[in-house]
Structure formats: C-alpha cells, structure tokens
Image (cartoon, rainbow, N blue to C red):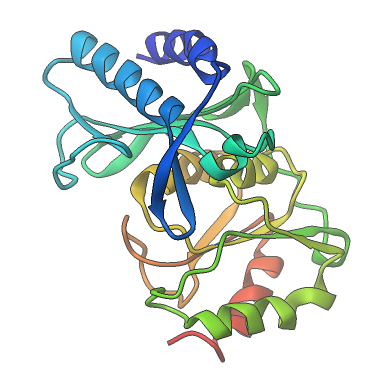
Amino acid sequence: MEKFLTNLLKEAKDIFFQKHKTLRHKSINDLLSQTDLDLNEYFVSAIKKEYPQARIIAEESDNDNLTDELTFVIDPLDGTCNYSMGIPLCGIQIAVLENKKPILSFIYLPNNDELYMAKKGEGAYLNGNKIVVNKDIEHNDGILLSSDFYEDEEDIELNNQYRLLEDLRLDFLKTRLFGASCIDFSYLVSSKAQAYICYYRQIWDIAPGLLLAKEAGLYVSRINKKDYRFNDESLVIANNIETLNLILDKASKYSK
C-alpha cells in the first residue's frame, strides 16, 4: 500500500501542473478548480481498482460517514485558493484509516517535490528520510501558525479566535497564516514552525497531517482539552509540552 500510494502521488504531478481553470466558488471563501476534479477522479479511480473493497472519502466526491472499515481519505488539492492565484503553498493529502484511526498518511508538495509520509508506530519521513521534530526550540524563538478563521467554530467564537492570536503574539517570534493545512503540517514536522492553532475540521484536512504530527513527536490537544474525534473542532499542536500548555492556558479564557 505504501509503494502503491507513493507511486500514485508521484504520477499525479502531471495533473497538478496542468493549466488550471477556476470553475466556481464552493463558498464565499473557497474555490473549485478543474485540477481539483481531475485529481479527485484520478485518485478515486486508481484506489477503487487496486482496493475495490475499501471505502473512500474524498473532498470532491459524495461520501458516506467514517466507519471502522479500511478507508482512504483524499484531499486531491489542498490550498486551492493559493493554487488558483499562483501561490505555491498547496499540495495533495492522503490518509489510510482502520477503525477510524490513521495508520498511513502522505502529504505531497509537488512544487518542492517533497513527499511526507507517516506510518503508525514507525515514525515520520521526508523523501524517505526519517524526521523527528526539534523539541528544544522555545516558543519565544519559534513560529506560531494559524489556520483560517471560522464563524461557525463550536469551540471558540470568531472574535475570540482573533483575540487569542493577539494574546499569543508576543509569546512567539512570529505568527503566520498560509491557508493550507498541508503546508502547516509539513512546516511543523520539519521544525520550520513550532506551534499551530487549527480550526479546519474536515477529515481530509486533518487526518494526513495529524498522523504525521504524532509520529514526528509533536504534542496534540483539542483547544478546550476535550477528546478529539474527526469532525470535532479546533486543534492545538506544538513541538513541546510547555508551548502546548501556554496556548491551552491562554485559550481557556476564550473557548466555550
């Protein structure tokens, strides 16, 4: 399966670099391109042929709910708005789940030819080389990432999402918002960033990077410290426990 998906991702490069066309707005703040649809069809067709009994949850498909069965979760083009604007902060994400838990995941960044992979219990890798997060970088020397903000966030209201970031601003060297979870998670596991407040909630945005983060040694919590399940809200991820607790403590006065 690892070899099959690695080859599939590498061969998707030609579709990724095709002349893209924005088709329409998926929402007021999101776009759909022809590349999204072409990549979605490419991955779904290939996986169905190789694993006909598996379930598939893909962003641009009609999907059933997550079950305990073997399931492929596909984000065919993460960061479509960046992609459509010619901003190279975008990529492809795939996770394989059993019993609702990720066991194998990939983030592929074609613009950099970087393939991140994680296997449950076996670590995280970049282009075949094992990577482990640097836990020695303190928050005041580190970069805090944030996902996009959401008005319908259940754990913390929109205005408080901004207030929390403002409250944390002086605790970190810099704050950054890149608009693609594939970039955020890849920067975390490669120690380019040290913490992440993530309000994305779709399983294809979260599952690939979440396994990578855990296997690279990052610390993960829901923002209100409750147990996390896919389609819940708000994650906090950090390179060490002190930084994680700093964010969670400050978030406690803003979260519901």
